[in-house]
Image (cartoon, rainbow, N blue to C red; front, side, top):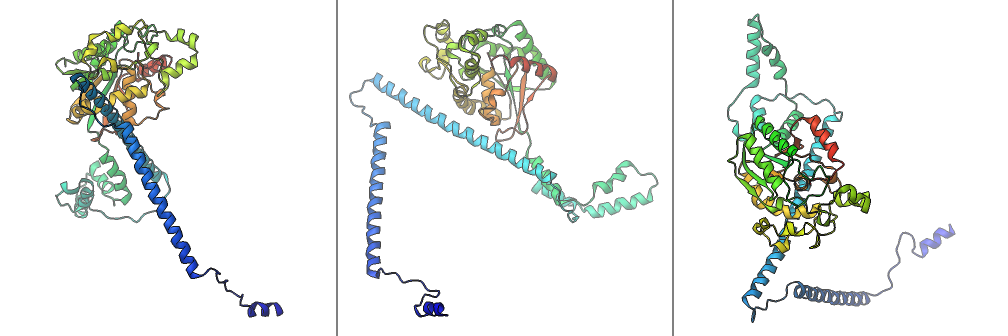
Length: 449
């Protein structure tokens, strides 16, 4: 009792102590804090401004054109174009990331629908939906005809009673005309939207002369072996049996890629189809490894290092230099005078990532418009250039792309939607047992020689 009285008398029951700081003091402190904050903000603003001016002065120095010769101005323009190309490549990389994310979103949506189908749900109330409502939901405004589904069902049942012989179709009418569950429409609508609109055929050239020797061929120009010629001819006959009619063919500027396209079109009876060639579809540049035997390299550098050079997505082999035995044969070849870049800007070595970077501008600017015009396109290229394009279209991860193997002379069918996204997994056309045997055999050699 005494303790409770003391609490009550001192005013501590349920009350907070009043702050000892005065109102004028609080106002002064708040004003001081605001002034300091204002000073800090102004300093930060000036610091950002100075940093921006510094970066601009480093990366974008003012043009000094006075006193420059015509040659100096031309060199300056070339340098600006080079920087613009780098910016364009960054833009294409962003587009690739967006396409990859869209594919992942579509896959997740499919998985959600699959999980919905597997989960146990309570029984839903049966809902009578007319044929008109069903067709209207599926076809939208295109469906204009009015149908009374229940009336038709009653008519069918009356005819059943009058007739002694009833066909199987009549027996199934009642089963076909049962009440439509709302979840049925959920499964029908996604399947309607995932329609194939475009077809693209990727083809790794037939076996080359250095394939048997297990050597890095890369940019060294080699013809097809006898077996490679047979592979290309067999590929053409198979595509003809499937009824493919190409509107445009794209190849690299290496002979084995062009020769494969010729043989395929000849076997199909479509020699007149236009062929467009570009160095951007060339095989991956293996740099100093060109011409070397893989088994000998494994002894000299170790199997692990050779595998990293061959299979890693972003690891670049040692560059080729003028002392290399095939340097002059490659860079003195007049076919490279036709490139959209100078010979000095051609790669001296490449990772698979760098190959994709130089391929994407050609893909977007030249190949994509032909596909979207409605033509079936054939790309006769190389193992690595085809794999790089598959990585871009299917959104394959950096780690999974090293596991993708494409046998020589086997066409790969890609069915794409209107945005050139795959609507189903790629399909290797031909005898599947032979294809799997070829993939296992190629697992011990490099992708695309």
